[in-house]
Every structure is written in structure tokens, then in C-alpha cells.
Length: 199
Length: 165
Image 1: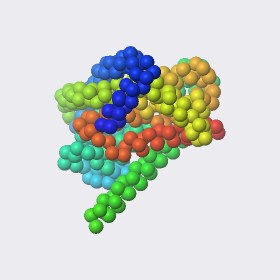
Image 2: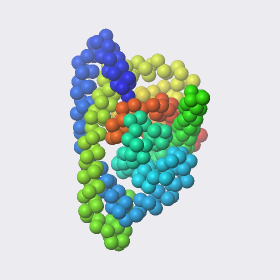
Image 3: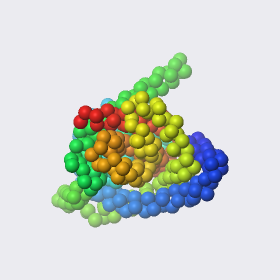
Image 4: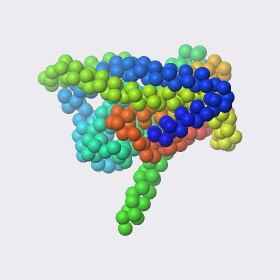
């Protein structure tokens, strides 16, 4: 993030100076900050609802049941996490909400999962392997039914707005498998080179 | 609809098992509010970077540079702006999709591919900034490259599957 941020801005500034779009680029910086605060406010509203509901579900033991469903998957993808009740519950809820296409419910559960995983790793300042896998799964969509897109097409007068369901589902599946596979590969290679250095 | 059902069921189940629903909800909501506040600076950094890269024309230039390569991979050239915007900003990607619908019609191959692509990818940069920011972790290891590769492949897969389905 560090390098991307610094060099991204420096690059943008250089290009803007050369192409004479310095005014617009400067304005974009300002409006980016404003957009973040506006987004934060709308997120805060959704988080209030979902974190509240999550807390209620947790209290009544519902979250434990959801976690039980996802336990085999977690053991495979993020070994070590399924032992920790707090982390595995939050991760499972995040996956469930993502599958249902409820992005704004998935995020609070996801953030809670990150916190729980950090605690599990003894306050790590570097993302752990489980965190990396979790984030990569979250950044390749899991959504089963793209409701927003279907309604957008319907609104534009499409003859069959739902016919993207199958291609979307197939490409979601392939993309997620690819992302998980790549992550496995990187983690395997990382482990081997660490072992090599130790020996 | 699903929001209402889920909330009502969660409340009912908890109340049925004799728990104090109201105070638990308020506790959770407070936590949510704190999380949202903690996340804002990180999101601001991501959004202003994206805004600057778009406004100075760097994204458009990168698109022109990539066009021959993505053409080989089967991604229509009309989808390049969307491909660049998708990892960066959900709302910008939706705005771009709106433009595509207006230009090509909702049942065109371009728009169907665009939809499949949007449905199978996420706003990676924002997700990473948000999730890592919430626990004040500043390094992202290999998450971003893998996320970007997955994003590119979502377009390849979408272009491929939309040709048949």
C-alpha cells in the first residue's frame, strides 16, 4: 500500500503537469477525501444495523451454527482459524453474506473477522496467511445472484435480464477457484523458501 | 426483503431463547459506528489515489497500452475502461456500465459480458484498504497482485462464457 500510494500520487502529479490537467487532478484529490467521508457515513448506518444484528445472533448462538456449516471449508482454506470460535464465526458469516449478495452485511462481519484473526496471531502487524486468503476470497466475488446487475438490465428494457445469471455464475466460480489456487501456490512456495533459508 | 426477514428472525430466535435483544443490538451498533470511523482515513487514501489517476488521464493511457494484449485474450476493447475501473471503484464501474447499456443496449454481447464481469469481480483496492485499515495493518503482501490477476481473469472468463450462454 505504501509504495502504491506514494508512487501513484507522484505519477499522477507528473502526468497532470505535463498534460496540463493539474487543476482537475488537484480537485480529484479533494473530492476523493470528501467521497470517503460520505461513504463512511453511509457505511456507519449499515454497520450499526448489521453489527447490532450480528451481536444479537451471537448472543443467541446462531453464529455458532453458521460457523459449523462452514467448518470443513475453513479447515481447507485457512488452517488454524477453525479452532478459534470468534474468528471462524466471523469468517463464516462474511462468506454467507457474500454468497447471498448482501455486501453491506458482509463487510462488518469481514472486519470483525480481521480483528479476530489479528488477535489470534498475537497482534500481527503483517497480514497472516489466513488473512491473505480471506482477503483474496473477498476480493474475488462470491455472489451467486447479481441482483443489482439484473435489475439494471431490466430497467434498461432487456428482453431477458436474468440470462446473465449462468455466465456470471460460471465466471465467478472460475475466478474464485483461480484466486484461491494462486494463493495456495504462493503460500506453498513461501513456506518452502523459508524452510530453505532455515536449513 | 431478505434484510427484514433476517433481522426479524435473528431477533425472534434470540428473544425466544430468553436473551436481552435490545441491549445486545445497541452494543453491536456502537461497535459498528467505531469501526466505520476507524476506516474512513484508509478509504480516503484509496479514493483520492483513484481519483487522481483517473483525472490526470493515466488510466485511459494504460487502457490504450493494454488494448492489443487484452484483445488477444478475447476481451472486447469497449470493456477496457470498465476493466480498469472495476478494481478501483464500485460506483465508477456502475456508472461506466450505465454508459455501456445506453450505447450498446442491455441485450448486447458487450453489456452481457460487462455484467458477468462485474458480477464475478470486486473493488479490490477498496476492499484491501478497508479490511487491512480496520486492523491498522499497512502492508498487503501478495494480496493485491493476486486480486488484480483474478480481476483480469474475471473479464476473460466473462467474455468466454457470454459467447455461449
